[in-house]
Image (cartoon, rainbow, N blue to C red; front, side):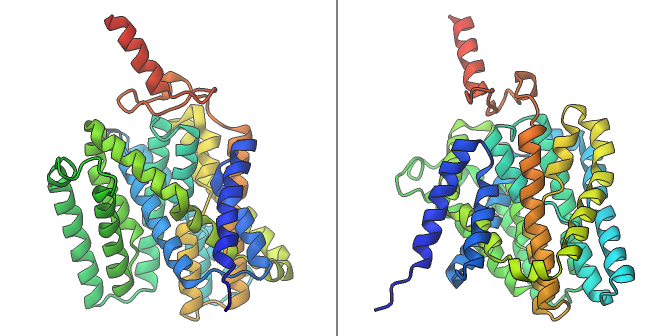
Length: 405
């Protein structure tokens, strides 16, 4: 009888990453990616169920990020979010494409794949860091997630327009996605306010959300699309419900708990396991140049606008928008499977993608963390934390209670 040790090792990594994160105060996502890359280079490879669960984790994180968006703020600050997000995509895409095509003499298609893969910002990484640091419900956090979504939408559209050939299944995927988003939002209260389903130990509301996201994944694979986009839009449409009802807020907290226990760690660990140190070392110069070029292009695209629109968190915003994981991995893997890039090019791109998820996030948290002051917190949601880790919403609520007495 052969005992499968891989799930046990991954489970240990999930636990150890959490303990290290709590000990040193860094985002657990960084540690999970780093440790995932270590065990991956020891010869431990993810099993197929892990790969699928990792894909679901990325979709789930994107959905949760959508639920955090303040649609009123997004509407009022759309110009600012759009400008930051679109330049965050365009400049890295053009810079990476030009370098790989004209300097490195990659094929035209390979250079396009490189441009798409390294133009991304990982909404999953950004959201995880903002939630862990208590910034998800601040105006800074919401603008950052909005701008990140614009960047990722540009990446997804570029990949689809340049490479994916539309078919009947593509139309089915788009149609199903739009209908799911519309009806899930329209009948939100019928499901989440039903007394027979609320606050039950079997969590039917969470399972309902999971079914919707799994439907996106199935039809996305069928139509060669990307499930993260409709998942974000679904979360965005539902965000107003999560702000209005206390029961819905509790549901989102329970959903986070389920996600962060095993599903989203699998996303980050499997992402790290895809990195090959040997192949990166074989082309370490190119790896370093592409990494620096991505960061520089992101800086040019984000920092000066962030300085204008988010003066208290411009460098923090720039660094987090330099991260890449979800669409960077999707684009690189698509290029490899389609024969547009070779194994070495794929490993270099994946290496840069993973490095950009770890290094800028580490620097942002270590040296450029914005102050957790009450004026940064959306009082309606009140989930930010002060420097002692106390929920500011709880402080505000206690003060209001004292005033009423």
